[in-house]
Length: 341
Image (cartoon, rainbow, N blue to C red; front, side, top):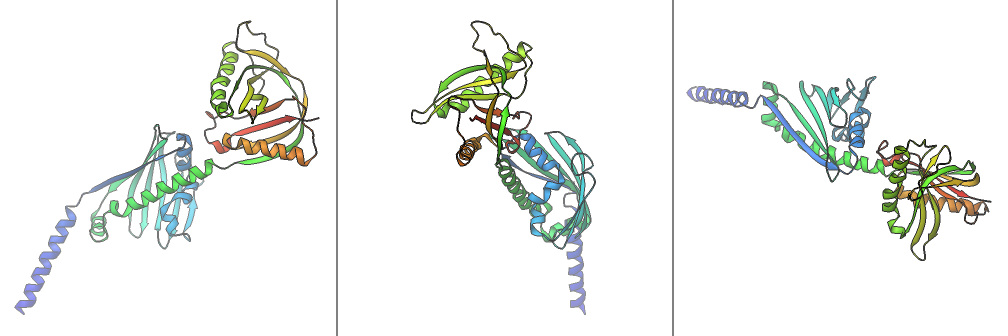
């Protein structure tokens, strides 16, 4: 009998000791994980801001593909919300409480199962030389039940950090994949209206083309804006000669104008005119890196349809989107026009 009382006494002491140990655990928790993603900050921000994108990178949903998701009427920005219910991920909901465009997103999570709890999520987005630094933070309070759970199942941080790492890895992967998407469409035969344009011209090695264009095109655009010249459309490049054998290209960077502009005699910016012409047209939606395939597609279309290219006729590359206003390369639109007889 004494032995039983002794055992019960020891158990009581152990229970009291455990209760004290649990009680003195931190009342709050906070942890974060970061990753640099090679993408414009607005592309990364928009991916996270719209909750409909979360199933694509959520490490929890990945573990419970049969879970049901319910999205609110608003899925991005303040008051965006969705709820989940599944065997593995339990039950809960999340709501966006504040947004600072391209800088931060704050969200509130309510867990219902496997236990009731609440926490806050804070996303921070920062420009770096390598890309966009994304920081995913979670913080909240721990009641006695939460502390008890963490003592036997591991802390909230220990259980969650691996999921954060996985989620950021998936976020990086899907953004990279999305930015590489492109499509090429042969639009057939069209009539190009021609018109006046401002331009500068140079020749260079084919490998230097992109850097030369980045240097020259802003000069033409700035000339037009500084002289209050009304532009009549999107900027374009006019190719005069493409010599693969000698690794040389001659081209002009151009901005269309509503009327003929007389520039200063010593100016590097000149005025030209395109007469209306019939052309084979191709549209590229995607990164400029895919332009070669778009040009090859245009040439194949011309060959397959027994069309003849006008010798020394216009060959244009028209840039309908501005990368500054359209940061995602997958949404860039470029049109190719090759004059045909």
